Length: 433
Image (tube, rainbow, N blue to C red; front, side, top):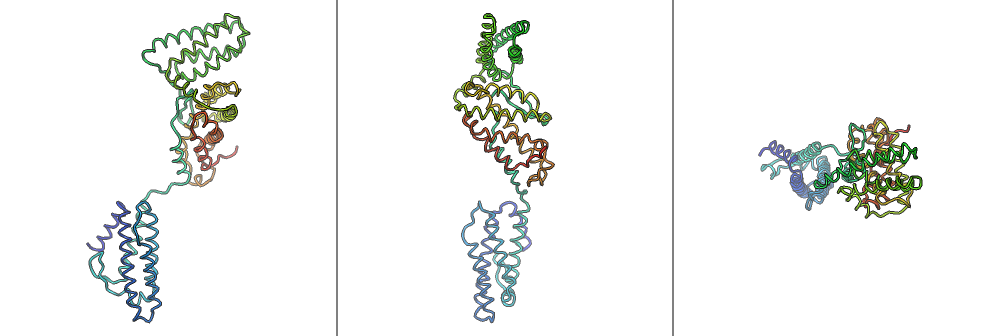
């Protein structure tokens, strides 16, 4: 094999198997160091520049020690560093006066190319081949990730998909929207479910008509009307079930103001709603999970405060957030505004919905990062993506960090706080209004 062919072979190895190339390079440089060191030792007795010869010997011994021992395949960069340090020591050897006058012209058998060569040429070629290989290989690697890109990858690993809950969300053309869910029951129950829904819709309309004509409190009228609309939509069964809990409380609050007949009618309507949602597997799974949740009144209070702040900020982001999103969250939060009276299912519903919203927004973090200019990735706050500029992602991250302890107890999860902190630490802060 010629010297040029050998170089081409080494370049190929640099691309396909750098670990193997590194092991061979270490062995070759170590052998070369021993060879130069031995020649320097032989020349000491007859050389007037014995001090210079000892320097050559010391340099080659340092190279041999550095490259002695096995190379760990997982630490390629460390091996490259040792090879480059050894190249630097060989460079110093080439500049040594004794080497130039007494050693570089010595003809030695070069085992790597199976012929005799001048010692100086061998050192020069080994240095060039080693340095070129490392430079070419490192240049072939993809660019290193920036800290914010690494944070985006970590966030992507932390953030789960949305869970079953009263509210799920989606991003459509950059707008956050409620993702309505079809009300799915067992095939054998479908006929009974359809009949029950029809009866409840009819009963609700009759009650709404009476309450409107009798000029009862508009709040009660609106609640009945809302329940009828939810039934007619035939979707979002968990949201309907949670609404039914709040509706039952409202009916009880107005019981003394209604004629006995209509009070009983509304109580029956409320009971019918509870029986209706119980026919849906999604609701039953949700109810079971909520029953296992553990939390304190202080947890509910902190969740309510954070949720209200989040809702307020979402309303401000009307170009990025569909109004149905904050309106729906506000409805759920209203059901937990009295911590000591809040039902487990309504607390679980509010927290799960906030978690789902945070999940959708956090999953967009990587996309946002790809749209941030290099200056932004280094901390400059201008010219960032729209969502970053308006602060929507920051609102979600701040909320996630704040509610994480309480949400962790309710949902038995801890991802929101970790992901929120990563985003707050690495994303450029939005410009102040």
